[in-house]
Length: 243
Image 1 (tube, one colour):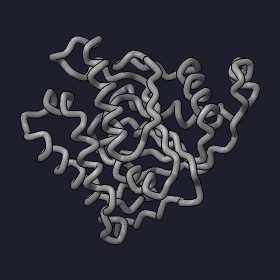
Image 2: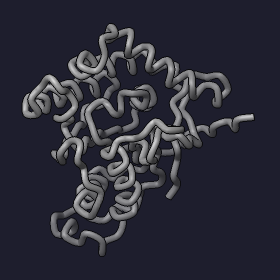
Image 3: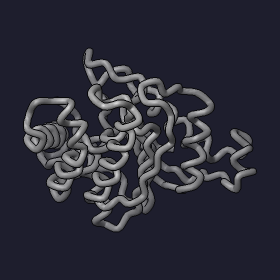
């Protein structure tokens, strides 16, 4: 019998969501974020790239502007107004000290208790291969949560006025093939659909399916899959790493 998922912690006020591309958060996580903003929790987004390599029919410079605009509109649907971009190059994000430094700096600025990111594992489960950007960013987030609290790692951040922050209590990984926790999201499903739909330019390049039908079907699949291990309640799952 498949083990049931535990309930995500609720004793926190600030979260920082760090992902590789515009739309990474909208494929499920936004349903949980909608509920959290309803509870007046502070959620900020940090995008490592602008997703400029994601639309074959658009030149990267044009795609970056479109996808940034769509991401800001998407975030607003679920009550998030703080959206930042780092401008690493889409498709070839490199895991290493430079990325860890940028993420540690963001964590020090925002001082979250909860950090959200996307699947860092090699696959999404089975043989469905994950992308290099997701793997690099997810791994770097897990490391940067610790880097942010150590004054002797990236000491130049202190010179920039970014004091160490050792207050990250959990890193929650969405889309993981090894989920441990979940959030009930019945109140956020409709906004999650609309939030994903704001990425219309990307979705129209991705599929010939009607964009709204595509979004509804995807969000339904994600929340139903988690529900099977969460008492039948619509949910979004995470692999939770306590610190």
